[in-house]
Image (cartoon, rainbow over all chains, first blue to last red; front, side, top):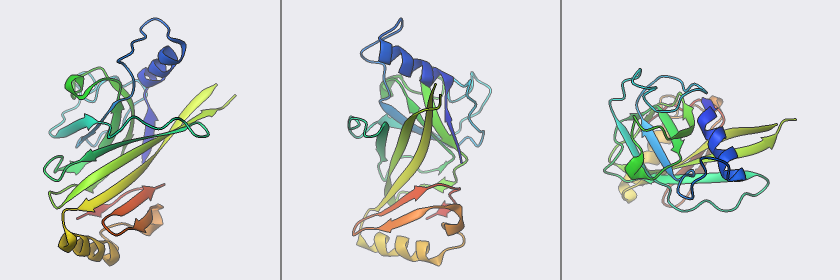
Length: 140
Length: 61
């Protein structure tokens, strides 16, 4: 499993933390997506389709189930539930986005972080709640 | 310098009791479902199975 925090996501974190240029009260991690592209994420990715370079046959996105709880020891968990009738394909990648579901698609420049290398055959027999947990750590 | 790392947790919730039994049977079958060598931890609950991973997932239900 490769877990990549996209540079754009790091920029978003910095912008929001400092309310710097580009700060917006509506742009924060609030949507999760899944798709069936087998390519690994790159830190330079800004869109799921890598500016048109990747073909994404199937994808699904939705708002997080709830606003994440306040960080505990610098850990924040983000959960999204895929209903039984949705996302029924082999999930290869899971990603977090900094906009509303209405503005998130394979071509939207909203990608903040992602986990690739999955082989998860979602079917209509079950719903799937996915939690992606982010650890913010100091490496200096 | 700040760093962000990520982990993944899946909660598989079958749509009824029969599906729950079927899911558990498939998970128990091992091999082509979830390879414990891949670092997944599994928590069977009354209406769902929760998986947390530190390795590769191979799951087909």
